[in-house]
Length: 174
Image (cartoon, rainbow, N blue to C red; front, side, top):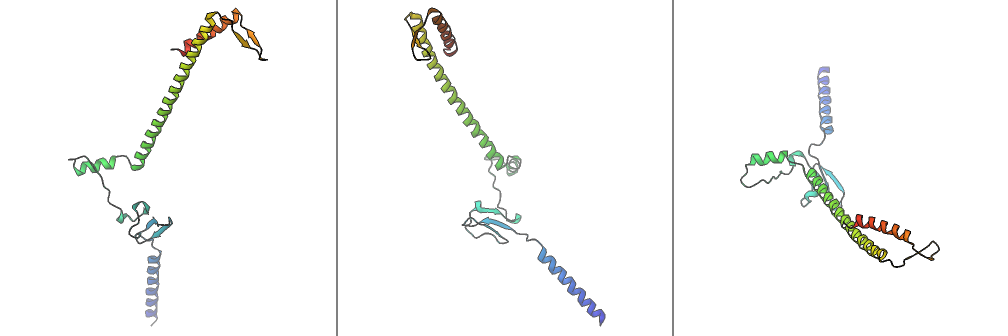
């Protein structure tokens, strides 16, 4: 009789151990999605029908949607699959598209700046040429001093102003 009890106890321990292993095993099929209210849901069952594909965040490997690869007309399936496998990922393509857009934006800003600078140069050129005509006409010119009083420009000051205006014309009127 003692041998029979010991055998039953070993069977019970073995069954309890097996039961514990089954309970402790991780769930193989794990789904993760956002419901209509935006809350994260976890389950071993798939999300309800009608859940948008973009809201399904994780699915079991056995439930992965088929990968659709489109290739040129007449290409063999093997060559299209090889090209798709070696091609850039979606994230890489998005990064490249962002970089292209940033480059275009930078180039557009550079063109705007160049256009503004060209307009400023044209304005500076026109003003400098007008000033040069006034200086060359020999007309009596005045400037205001620090107190706001008019002071007549003498010949030395006129020559200095003409030299400064020539340098502006040389740099701005290309």
